[in-house]
Image (cartoon, one colour):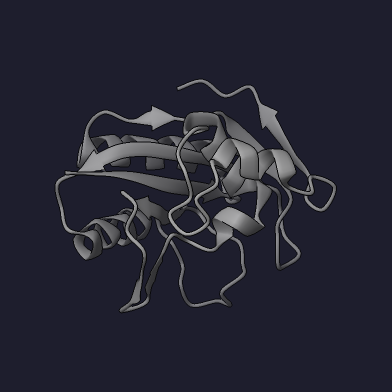
Length: 162
């Protein structure tokens, strides 16, 4: 069994799709550890603001099958993949970490690079796994967040209950 961390984002019907994503993850993986929900500006394109969060859970599936389940959940929630990479979406689920696995194969790179680049991934990850260490840098997520330049990206926690 592997401990996995998943980032969830939505900027189309955000509340509905955030709830639907969490419910689908619970059906697929069981007990979840949820970060707060954060509102962030769109990064890489002009678009509506996103709701973002990070979810931790356990997976008994191999890494590629785990990632396939995330794609299936996105598809079941009307994820449109026909547009550009950076575009609005109903639901975006990215596998951030699969235990401490480091890999880059078959279109899957772990740990996911966005952890070190985007506040909307790093802050919620540091919230639920502050003492966990990045498998490549060896630095805890709390320390990475503490050193992160927070002036580059607008991010704020919102009142959102499940």
